[in-house]
Image (cartoon, rainbow over all chains, first blue to last red; front, top):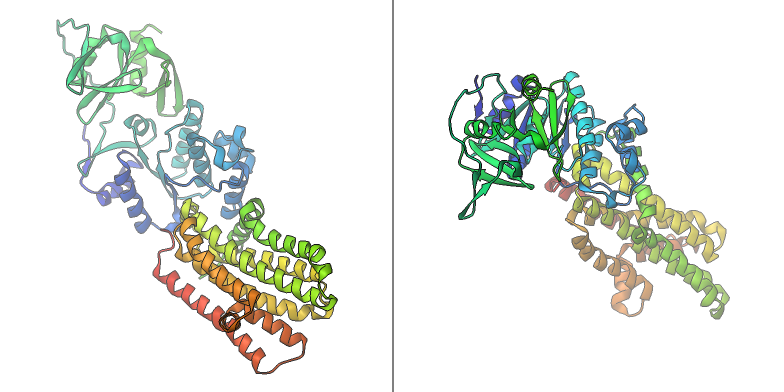
Length: 304
Length: 240
């Protein structure tokens, strides 16, 4: 399977028509460059932006803020429905200055949703959101995509990029690399090794984790990271080796880039037509992308 | 540059509500009115009867024009820049012209209303009201345009107040004190001093040289503010 690598922002965005939507894992500097590029190359009337800084008018309530943009854009749907769609029903009377980061994200998404653009640039659309809100946002993105809109999103975590409908990329040395689509192939490597501890580096020391401590394993830029109690630790072992070893400890490869400790899984949910997510019962209730193609395998493996 | 009425009315409503909800700014109109009331009942009884109305009018009109005139537009523009809400508006296809016009219109309406209340409280004869409206509108529009220029030039509320305070003092102190040659001269060439001159000359039926000169002073300030605004508007990218 081909994975695309683009050398520059213009090339990446030219690929937008092939991919439909681009979900990029990158830092804020790259995000700013992409934002400026889109701003200067796309027609202002057809683009909508969600950027990091705006916290709205601090003396307005959420409802007044949404109401203002409702009038500004001449939106026809009722304000109440929009608040409901973006999980804002509970904070409608709250003052803008008293909100939490995730609520700002939802409000800004509700704002851009009224703009009816052809291209949406969203910075961190899923960060700080709880599962319920995340599901609502993903469904909205899918709806807009079906209506022909394109999305460019910037994400701090590859997990978020993979969850959204479209193609996920990560940025590395000024290049943009596509994250491989999840195929059905699996490396059948039978090894007799019996390792009970997984080594991971932390500064000068090498930590040895027991499998049950690990929530999930994430692979990014050809490295693997163990998530233990909310912190990511890099490990030298490649993903396929980890999969082999940890299979015995009840781990499942739920996505090309993710290996999850099924003991810690709380439930899995269908969020959009093609996106499923596994929710863990750790402190953060981490959401892990779950490939459609692997669900049957998972059910079989664990006899569900 | 085209202006969409839908967008403009949404902006106007938002700016007006924000003026009402922001005590630091609405005080700029309430304070002069409160001062006029205070002086009317505390200081007024000690003054000669024919002096009271003129004193109250000078006090209230000068305070209101210099405070709300200078503060409303510039502070609110600076706040929108500082909090990045201006950037969001521009990205939502609001033109910078719509953005500024809505704020200017709010300031003109509010200052006008304040001036009217001050006139009614001062007890000046009612037949002076057309002249008063003409003079106060001219003076306040001129100051509000300067305020828009300050808003355009400042990056945040802090840098905005650095410009606001000297401008306020320059416009307020000379006509309010009007003692000594320097202050008298300054009062004559600043817009609010000229505004009072226009009012008193016209109600006394003087249409001569000093009236024309006072008109010219106000119009010169207004024209300068508009020209400078246009210049910096083109030069500066309004979304920092």
